[in-house]
Amino acid sequence: MAMYLYGSPRLTKDVDIIATNYISLKANALLNFGGSNYIIEIGKYKVAIDWIVRNDGYAKYYKAALVDAISMPKGYKLISPEWLLILKMFAGRQKDYDDIVFLLRQKELVYRPKVKTNIVKVAGEDAWLATLPNFRRLCNLADGKIDEPDEYYDQD
Image 1 (cartoon, helix red, strand yellow):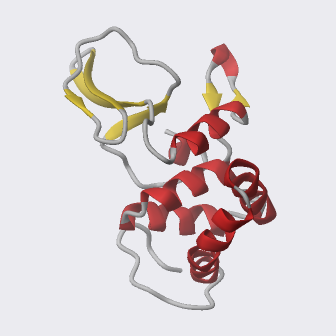
Image 2 (spheres, rainbow, N blue to C red; image 1 turned 135 degrees about the vertical axis):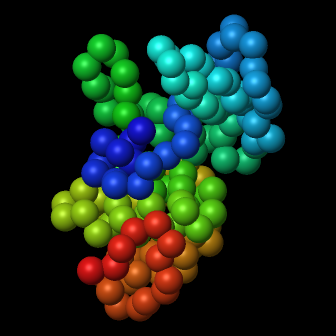
């Protein structure tokens, strides 16, 4: 949903919700990194929802993303583009990298120094230094300095 709200044309097959606690619905499946998958019926449609409650080494990043989330109408919160980028970078799937490049290409959406600030705030300078080469590669892709196949977005 956040990618859509930040302008992504890529359609998603599910909705991811970051949470601090579980909900009392019957789960369709458990997520191996913490949380549950639910199938919710909305009218004639079935929607897959991943209710993410991390229980691994990345949990601290998800909690920090929630703390820094942007308040939306009706009490909903939206994680910032910088946090979305960080969480997608750690997920490490090709579609997540493509999403990151999309976010970085959007004019004035991602404040790149904030990515470093967020990672250092949560896990220290060593975590940032470990992340930096991949972040630089993704920035270079977004800035057109290097080129790789892009599965989800058209290159202009």
